[in-house]
Length: 541
Image (cartoon, rainbow, N blue to C red; front, side, top):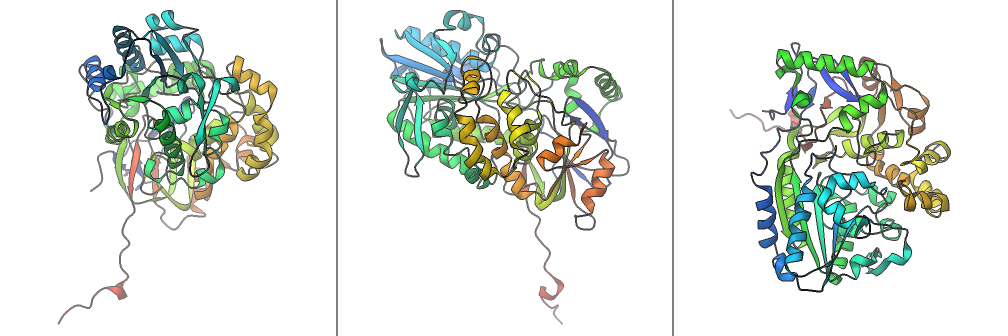
């Protein structure tokens, strides 16, 4: 019997409503198709502040935080950036609550040499108003901008080499953090690939360290980015993190949240369409109609600018790996939906947001990373689609970029991709040129652009999906150029896409659709094949 979150379409089923960017599209799926829905949000903690205090006083595999403190010591607090959660969290953000309690404790123990670094790695610098939203007015006013600031991976004088792992990965981190008596990392874990050693070893590093694992060779060896034990990327990061933690005094604080992405007026977007009340059905139709009539920036604002009512489900502190074990357990509890049997055709809408376009437009390269990277990889054990199968996505694939945030992306898509889509060639020939581009480095350091290597990493992020899938078909693209550039086919409607997909699929193909956001993961088990008749034991008598 299937899990309640896996719904099989029959002749009485209502049409499914899937995201296509910042629009909602009604889709009639064939009878027998399965649709996977997110689990209901886990119940949040009743007293978050008490949970924070308990965690730092009863840490895993570590002495309590207060026991690590002494007057006059140098402490660096590092924290996750705006790439999570998605969308941003209603105030107070959990990071503000953790920071408030930790800073009070430091003050009580006479620690006044404290700086807070936003661990952006090669992500864009957060703007002051974005930082204020995350840390709150009191902390922002007290620390910004001299003692609360964005990490700068291109300020080479402020980077310090720590050593090289047994596999040759170079570990170079933020100098202020390395030279501190204590690093406290404040994490918000959105998905299972977040947190753990990734926090310090990636968040505070630069290109010299990133290139060890953000490359096509490593990405092709990942069997799910969301299942750390089967991810070569995670394995590399763990090696680097262990080296760092041997040399540094790191105290990790990780937090988990539920998947309550939509507030009360839009909560029906997470539900099975067959279970909607009359009022909810009317509201859904009204929302679809309204979005179709609105200009694009207004549509985007409805979803992206409204903070989400995420509830905090766990707070864990102490030694990095011991902490992360508990974080992962809570994360999988929220996200994992048991699904039996891989599909021949996997269908998903591509929503309006990714970790890399907060407060900007989801450009075509990020559509690619959402499809081939994140959504394809939302599984454990086995991919949701069989090797060589077809993925059908829904998105307009508009040829539009945010000039402030994604300047390097424009040249990558319009100059480099027409030359080659081969990730190894991109890595060897083009990436080094971009990495040294002084104009792009200037935009990263002093503007709010992603690092010039970031578009390459976004292409490599799709490698696992590209290597596994036979075809990708886009429904609803507003142009043919971008899908062709990405190596995709186009269809005007879902019916047309399914007809195309069936041409290369087995008879009566298994169709699986993902109803997200909110986030979930498929805990896949491959169906056991029936033994051929000749292999069955002969009947007795």
